[in-house]
Amino acid sequence: MIRALLAACALLLTAACTPVVMPAGPPVALPRLEPEAVIAADGARLPMRVFPPEGAPRAVILALHGFNDHSGNFLTDSLEVLMQAGMLVYAYDQRGFGRAPNRGYWAGAETMAADAAAAARLLAERHPGLPLFMMGESMGAAVSILAAGMDPAPPVRGYVLLAPALWNRELMNPLMRGGIWLAERTIPALPVQGGVGGVVASDNEAALRRLGRDPLVIRVTRVDSALGLMDLMDKAVAALPRCCGGAPALLLYGERDMIVPPRMTRAAVASVPAQTGLRIGVYAGGYHLLLAGGNREEVVRDILAFIEDPRGPLPSDAEARAPGWLAR
Image (cartoon, rainbow, N blue to C red):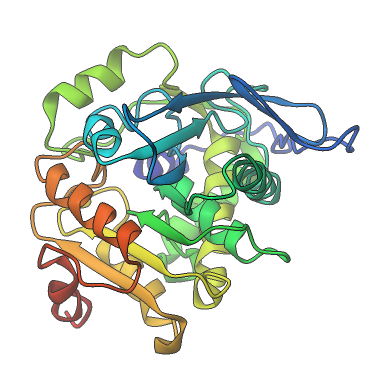
């Protein structure tokens, strides 16, 4: 979708208009949990799915989906393994996606981060005896990075950042930056459909077909929503050096990621001081959707090991592979 936006930005239209953003409204009550929803402070109802393990839970995961996806899809291919390992998983539809309010419209990075932080606080209160981890995929990982920088930070034991959406505009070529500037001022409401030929998010064809059939997955995107994603990515890149409020964080990336270019991820990670404790794992056969790909079992084993001991070794060689990949 990011690459589709850049292609759309080359269009020249004459009618100028303003991008639409639909942030949270004024607070009307304290945030709360319902059985199937997070109720935000402004009253917005964010539909939530709960995936309990068969036995007693060992940890709680708050999972944040990616751009145009929803809470019922992105975990599908890895959920069973997580639940078998004793993970109690919560996932909600972020504003503008799935069954959440204002579907197709961007809510703003700050609103989305505040929603994630509020959900984490509510889950920590519901499960005071269990370690809580925030796990985000792509856009959800960028939201997690911003939430981690809030004051106070979410009460989580650690963060899992799966192929985070880190694409700094400053590193784009002038043509891309110019196209985005033009699109923001001329065609924010233009619907964009489809992707770029040859660019795939996963090697799991069944998962890609499922995405294509799922009615809750957004396939026609407003340009201003994609521009909002660009803003979120810029902010996540700026916030990453301060991630993640003293809590351990594990950033996982696939060498075959065609959605977030490796150059952007390397540049973002290079700005992170070593003392922050950000851990990085790189998978040789990994695509963007790490939880759906052919090496998903390896990825999930690493996630579970991190949850068991955030400072212990990973069972795969992903972390050992990272320094060489970053040095390219």
